[in-house]
Image 1: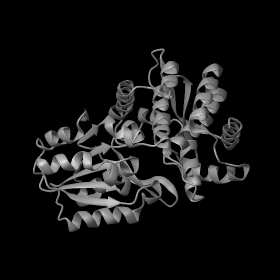
Image 2: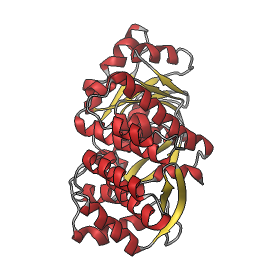
Image 3: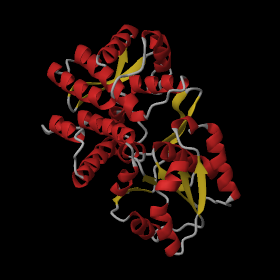
Image 4: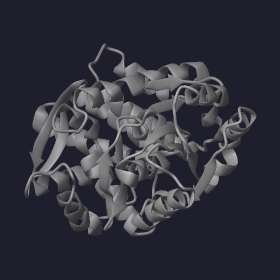
Length: 351
């Protein structure tokens, strides 16, 4: 269940009172421990709900098997059982890795996501996808394991820097592109990118974005069909993200997805007739949002090789989600090498 909280500590305590568990664990990284944990820990202590804290290093470069092993060992040291409960307090790295720890420990324990970044609120914390990076590939090892609850609180947004807000905004624009269009997608996308958007309006747009994610995730929980709509921008985006991580120049996920959407909008226009005016509109908007993509002509073959290992592929075919128009999605579209290279050219030319 997704719950919106104005007072996250109070809402969490009320939620936990309805759950039977023997031990409570909270997973944080070194940033969320300092900035976000006090918003929930004081309420838990006042309610007489003891917890054990597990702290891991921040950053996607730490979403690894060794970090996962540390979480497992911490659960063992804390005498966790199959009746224990894990709270994942943090961004997408925490909800991905923490969810996978919950999915795999003792063959599955319950967990609650409390996302603290905009990206995690609208994407990573919802839908039950969990995992870690492995072998240089994004989310290569993981499982589908739904959280018991997701608690959304806009107060956490005040802890974010510009880069984290941009990262989440890019995913929200993706949701506008793939959801059934009511004629407001373009104006809402522009509104999202305004610097003076009110917190109340942002809360409304976050709720709408989460509803889009749920729309697809609930229809297709294990991504056998229409849920693949949510992968728009990710075939190219994940490859860019993995390449930059390999180069030790990591970027936040939403930046890579933003560049990926620029490339996949281009292919959508060439292949599927996505309207030129809308392609230009969203390309301009995304380029202004995420900035220039730091890839060169020397990166093309590496990017192609990374795309060949994408989880969405079938055999040797690189499969991609494309659009015929806003809200009109085509999944499992096979792409050729020359098309992908043209799209990377387009990303670089849009800089």
